[in-house]
Amino acid sequence: METTTVKAKTLSNFIGGQWVKSATDRYEDVPNPATGEIMAQVPVSTREDLDQAVSVAKDAFKKWKKTPVPQRARIMFKYQQLLVDHWDELAKLITVENGKSLTEAHGEVLRGIECVEFAAGAPSLMMGQQLPDIATNIESGMYRYPIGVIGGITPFNFPMMVPAWMFPLAIVAGNTFVMKPSERTPLLANRLAELLKEAGLPDGVFNIVHGAHDVVNGLLEHPDVPAISFVGSQPVAEYVYKTGTSHGKRVQALAGAKNHSIVMPDADLDNAVKNITGAAFGSAGERCMAAAVVVAVGDVADELVDRLKQAADDITIGNGLEEGIFLGPVIRPAHKDRTIGYIESGVEEGAKLVRDGREDESGSEGGYFVGPTIFDEVTQEMKIWKDEIFAPVLSIVRVETLTEAIEFANASDFANGACLYTDSASAIREFRDDIDAGMLGVNLGVPAPMAFFPFSGYKKSFYGDLHANGKDGIEFYTRKKMLTQRH
Ligand code: NAD
Image 1: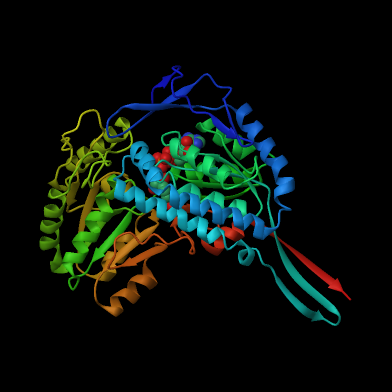
Image 2 (image 1 turned 90 degrees about the vertical axis):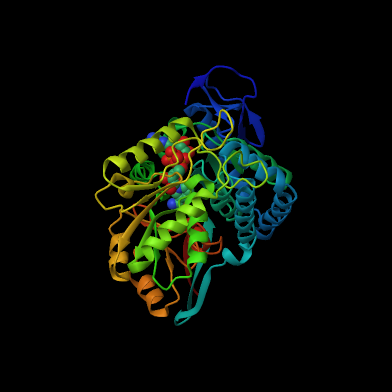
């Protein structure tokens, strides 16, 4: 991304409940990916900015951790209401900074709201456990406490849902929070902060420091930040996990993916094609739960490929703000170039290009569009199978049995999601038992768990022990004290 010193529509950091100008002289443009129009400049903040935010958050922690849990939860109730009231506005902000369609953006806001609703159950979530008689006249109990200042680092592809996996639960548990949103989608983050303040969150409990590597490294090395939640690409997740843990922090780092959808010969093809098309090309394939690979089992392959191509041909491409648009742009010109590079490599490595999305089919000017692309006869030697492309590119693989299909999927370095299309109970059982992936779907496209369950990737899709969301989330954001007493 080009850096600029133009200061029009300059964004600020949110520290101690105030908009604070960064100490930096470096700014990055924030374009609308559907038009190329520059909407804002985001500061590439400095360590000094970060240190200020952590210091404010550390100070706020002293009082916030002692604020009664029901009182903290009540702020979440209020926040939930504000998010519902501002649903449309938030969805539009997501569409203009990320590019996904307004329908998808509305769905994303809902996923975020659910996280807040889950967090509002804090009085139950924060409960410990007691055993009155562990020995004669001796009882023991576990008490749950917050940890301190949590650092959150988020990606561009879900500007609302991913931050909402982190800060509502972290805060309601009594922690304070410093978030470093993606520099490519900083606008919605600022709005989330404003609404938190409006909901009555005390100043300093939630802070935002915009920027890139310097802020991330500052969080990873800061002695006053005991825990880091990260979501982003695999190499950065691995780096964040290793660096954070080597500085003595607890780290959860959710990473990239290459999700396989297995289609059995008995599958309802109308349903399979509809769901795979939505999961492969929705949000321009920029989803960690995107259907990137279809594994066609037995004689289903020819008809499946024809129907997927037909469905891809019918997709409407353009600015996600417009009515009826399904496929928006990818996030940046560099990402478009990278995707085209992958399509070229697929052709060179001998995959059969069934549909070519390299030509801009959007009819709009200035946006970063890639059309739906489908490769057939993909093998494990090809880069288009090995790597996460994170764009509307679908690979199709042909095998003879379910066991072979599962082995094929399990050969991937990634293990985030996987889907099976079938009516067979025994096939579902074999799939559930033997597939490596942590988030499984049967006869549906994007099996992303809701806020009450953990977001369960494995292998190179996740670094850490406790996943985001659900009970794992509350475990991650709290520490336990055991009290044993004699009476
Ligand atoms: P990214 O890794 O480029 O960026 C994520 C965050 O890390 C950003 O805040 C960015 O500023 C920061 N960052 C980037 N490079 C860095 C570096 N070298 N050092 C320090 N910090 C750095 O990811 P992205 O492109 O914004 O998001 C897409 C990726 O996120 C995809 O790989 C996708 O699969 C993954 N993702 C995973 C999940 C999941 O639940 N597993 C969910 C959403 C997205």
